[in-house]
Length: 342
Image (cartoon, rainbow, N blue to C red; front, top):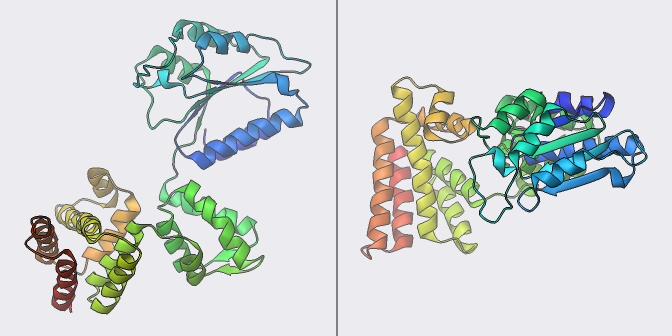
């Protein structure tokens, strides 16, 4: 079950005895938490009917004991299980010994008067374990995994529309890139933009540039774009701004090497027939970064990208061995590369 369906069910349908919440998207996890707590409030349950256990500090025996207790002046009690590391391949040396059999036994006949919610915010669960198999069989599974690009766009567009605002296509693309296609980051920044735009207003590129902070990687991405466009003046200006902000030239060069490596890898994989999704999976980066890289490398032959990468690596070596001044090396790279591209 996805989070949209789950939120509707939690708010309006009878609650189930056991839930397993998987996935690492913090915003969606928090939305589900609020829905469960609001449901308790709507059902007029006393605070005594809620208990949360951190499994890195508590034991399964405590959880089961609480789950088997009758509710206090209410129809049900709610028990949250946090950090259930025993569902993964992780080993916690400082955690108490866990009686997995006790939880397995409870899952065979869970009480109707208890809502047991297990928050498994891990990238992957160990599917080989008995307890994982039992939960997948007995529990209502809610997936709070990070959204794919299309789902993320739809979610944010819907949210912006519900708030009575609009966003231009260019502004939306820039906003997604600056928030790394991460829903939690996007929602943290979106309220500022909505407040600035006002009801009925439109979020613009300028507002996104002014209000959404850029990371060092974002700034180096812009520098890379300026170099690839042959714009030495803008590239040098971006470099100087970063330098004034205290960013080390060696660090900038290292990030730039990573950016150009991505372009080179994308170009090579494209030439042998890989598509965007295949490239992203092979390299291990977000598909949108590959999408941008594919747009950038379309104008450049492979030898040009190879030469850029070799020059950056050589500069890094010469700087670190004291053969070349770091700032001079970076500036020369910008000037030589933009001149060749022009």
